[in-house]
Image (cartoon, rainbow, N blue to C red; front, side):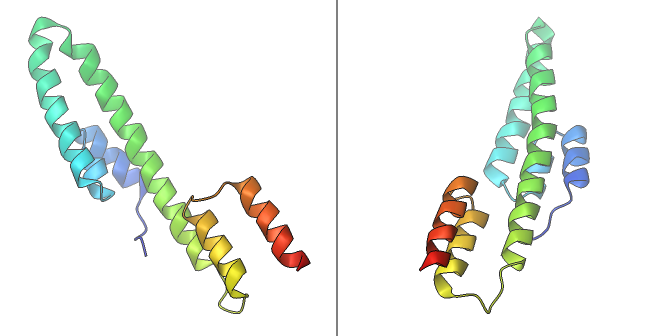
Length: 117
């Protein structure tokens, strides 16, 4: 099961170094890519085009780190709420919804069908 992540820490890490928040969230490849791009854009700032690119990457890195940490926490909390006393099909349905495999509308429709049978 995924570990709880602090969205605040993820944002602060990404504020300090773009990509560090992604690494904290367990997205190592994405974090390394962000760090590499921040170095490239930093070097490109000598010719001015790197400044806006770096700023865009920096802000997006903070947003992405926050979003991923919140999504991780949401999935972790949803999985904890699944009762062991529920019928197996309903457990499976809740897990699929918690993992983002189905939408809320699909979940509600399938849940209603399961409850009717």
